[in-house]
Amino acid sequence: MPTFTIETTYRLPVFRQRSYEAETLEAACRLAIDDDDWSDQKEDYETSGETYVTGAWTGDVAPYSTPDLNVPVQFDETVQRKADMFGTLLDLLQESARPMGLSHHDFQRWLPRAKAAIATAKAIADGRVDPIDATTDAVGGRGQ
Image 1: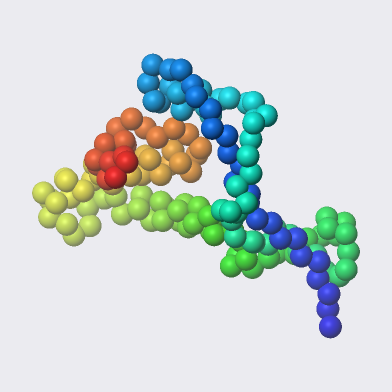
Image 2: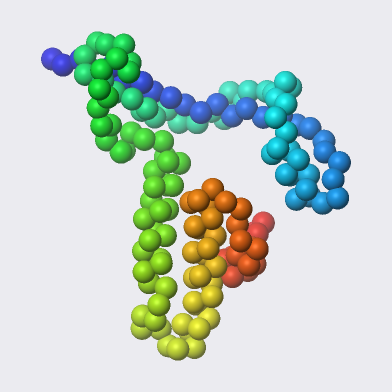
């Protein structure tokens, strides 16, 4: 019977709670994100993430000592699978962001919302801040 060496991982939330003096909530959030001092960090073992496969090798070998195997996607982290699917769905939404059978009036209401959703999705996919015009109710609003 074959033997496989499997590396599994789970994410452990690490947090800190610190006060920041700033003009706005957004400015305080930016200060917190930019703060590199984690000397007072705490680990949250109660809410650790799911276990997922991060590597696999044929045989009873030291990890990374031989070529790794392609692990079936269902063993990847769920949040990564969602992110991968997000990209696919974004591509599909971009293709359909043109007249398709909606009435002209319905399409005129739908198109700005679709474009705002695309802009926000592209920003997320690119690791950028959401565009200002995409933070309105056109994509469902914030904090709802």
